[in-house]
Length: 163
Image (cartoon, rainbow, N blue to C red; front, side, top):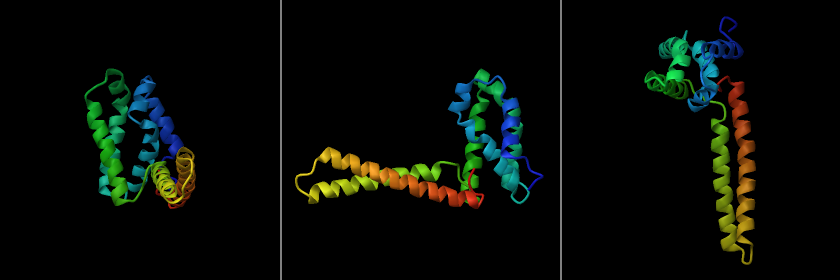
């Protein structure tokens, strides 16, 4: 695996290619994960033809990306579509997920389950403070979801399926 560029090397490469691009555009197009995505596509490109095509297309597009962002060029639509296709491919075919995806899902589910538990408590137990019980249920659910999501992402990261 040493023949592939590291994530830090991809950060450096893409930083030089995006030099002068507006920071707002970089945030708007969610390019914070782009170096990690390129690293994963590069590691899979030898065994997967689809990854190779996505890698080559995105790598080629990244040379013009900074200029496209400055001028708000229509090519950005094509870039976004290619980016979404590559993410979808990694997710469906290689079971590789973006960092934070499982954490946010588990936190959301935890909050919903916590609120549901609070609603059941309100119906069953008479004389409880509704606002306090709902807030407590949501908080406990969020914390349990956060812990479960972190554990899930740690397991996925150990399997090298997180970018």
